[in-house]
Length: 139
Image (tube, rainbow, N blue to C red):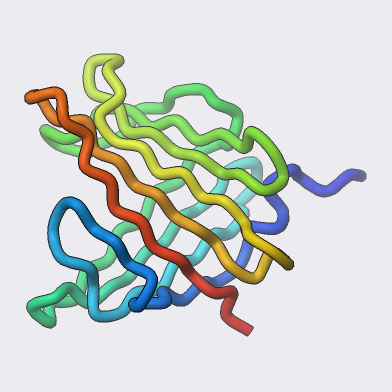
């Protein structure tokens, strides 16, 4: 059986705080990111300490097939889409009423030990602030 196209993203990742460039909000003080398989779904777990010292956790799951699935994101999102365009790219989008409101593009760099994460929010005023950071594979 062949390995899934997203295989190289699986595992735990640690934020390199010095790589953060944020256009919206303040970068976190620290963060970890875990991507795991559960059957035919990917599970994304993110934990971070924000600039004020508060801890946060977000988790979501989806099939990485590019199909929208229902998501209880309150006023922010009602569906998610996860896709793996290549073995070095893993993308997700949050939608509300079929309109894309947020994206996260993950790309593996070099020897696949660094994940570049670019998060973009599409605001009603037409702007789209982007936050970018790099995570190192946790050994």
